[in-house]
Image (tube, rainbow, N blue to C red; front, side, top):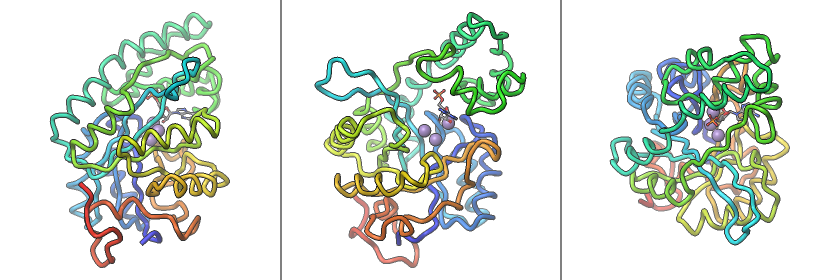
Length: 304
Ligand code: AMP
Ligand code: MN
Ligand code: MN
Ligand code: MN
């Protein structure tokens, strides 16, 4: 079961991806995915179209979301707050607690965008607010990726990685600290909607090994189920250490391209190594979702 080509983390133009839901589903089907999840940042507005398109192509579809969270290690008063991302899979997108929670997280993105633009001007750059706003198809989801694309389009940086490195990450002139959801609220909303909670791309966070253990422990205590091991947001050298930590904490493993755009994301949906390629003992998080046709059940059924 952990050999299956499930790709459970991908973005559409409803957040900071560039493909429509239909285009993303078609790409996943072309690439031979056994299942696809759309997991836009803080919104589920791309799910209905994705589900329809997937049904038309006979592709198994998993409704998802990637929630922005602000976290600091409990008990460490000096700890810096870190933005982390929690993916929800198999969610009921009509659930009121989830819908209201996501709306509260989205609020403030446009004001934050104005502040990013102001700081960039202060740093001697042109005002790129309108350009970034144009790049955001879903205006309330204006985010740093849209600013990165605007900076690239103006020729200020060669690519979006450079835009983040020079301007949009902590310590750089266009970075605006922001308070997102709490870890416990994010997990609660996902569970309220009948979903499974997964820590996204842990190796991306600026946490040392001890704080990473604190994050995994707290997440487990909150009832969180899984963690991404194989993701386009990890370097392949990070798969094995994350797999070991996942097993040590009793977490299920997930896999997803974190696809945004062809020239921005290293791998398309469905093209990463399987979980089994990394570690045969990983328990796939899709064992917790509804039964996969033709596959033996791993855990005796759904947990929620
Ligand atoms: P936001 O939610 O507006 O803060 O934007 C977060 C998004 O920015 C992430 O989901 C990534 O798509 C993108 N991002 C963050 N850091 C980087 C980076 N170093 N390189 C490329 N994209 C990044
Ligand atoms: Mn993104
Ligand atoms: Mn993320
Ligand atoms: Mn993502």
